[in-house]
Image (tube, rainbow, N blue to C red; front, side, top):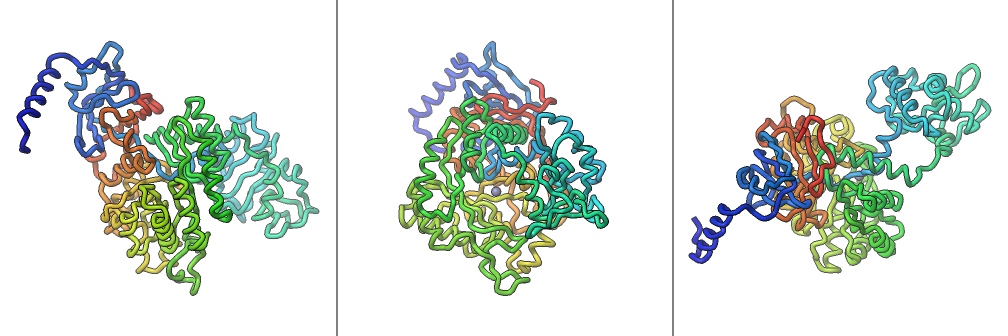
Length: 567
Ligand SMILES: [Zn+2]
């Protein structure tokens, strides 16, 4: 037992007595009782109950003591052992553009032509207000010669032009109205870099346009209006709240997206805290610092801030556009090309850091990661290391020599852990082009975490599932979230549940410079709280992705409630 000075002991006794004697003055709006409360606070990691008042956490502790804050208007919810956590933060997400995709005619992942037809008919019927039916995601093998016909689409959408992209984005299926509007007929020549599929007898377009030929129609699709972006954002927010997400880092924002965030912030409908990463036009160089500073000022709101700057350092692995330290195995001499030169990157980082921006970088290949860490180091040397919390997202391949540098530079590793298992993108498209030695260092979450560096988590939605529980499970198992138990892929890089929950709660709050106001459940912190249907620490790790969020509170108010969760 630690030594306690008598005066302190007397005070503690006095406080205990006064607590036991009269009830506390403040009344709770809501008390969650009999839960498995994981506060994520070092001082008091576990509790049974949380009391909330005025949007803040009032008390965390036992059910008996929490109930002392009960007043006449207090709602009391008996959780029956369900789990309570600080609400999740997704630290790399495209919330508006993802939401727009949700609202378009989404025909991805449907197993049959009939299912595709049914979805299109349903969507068109549900959206009489749309002048065009736009969407995509059809799988090539569903149609003979990967060539869906205009007649089929005419039957589904007879009254308006329709254009639907293939899942791989290289073909478009259009109806007769769209072809007529674009003036595409048997006399139209194939454009450069594209092909109009035609009937071999008549020469008439059949309804599929390849590559640049799709542009003949797509250039006519009405541009998105500000209200479209707002609708997309609302759809994205609703999904985020369902998954227990109450804070996000928008991965790349320009003025259209910022306008949408700002509109909902003003109307009080922004149901997540948003740190927007302002898209940097890297070709404009250091002058971007001034432009972004003006944007940051203009878009500072209540739940919105635009204090981060987003730089793309390279492309992606599968088409060999990620920047590597050593050449791709299948392409001698080709190391991929970074999207900016190291010297330009350093100068840009120095300027943005000096202007007070937190730098958020897309880096996939090990050379892009090293260049980014070098740029962060250059910024620190030039301006002083000032707790800027710069971070790198994706981090598919990290050279082991660079792993300790995150901690040393105070930079966070923003992983998309859902990608860290041996799916076909890895086995068929990545391992063969990297070779076995380097592949050991794919998504090295465990190694970076072991250095004590900050590990944050994000989905990159709509690239992949937004559900944080999917990503958390994969980080623990290094297997697909739906796979049965079995051998992990690179088991050395597994991490534990505590590390991943921190990534999505406390470290997220820290990454957004909000750690003093949220990210843990402690008195005085924002009541950003979630209830899950089961205690993640009490179930096999393979079941984590099956758990469901039942309630999401932001500032103490429900932004999502599962219909099964009555209170
Ligand atoms: Zn992204």
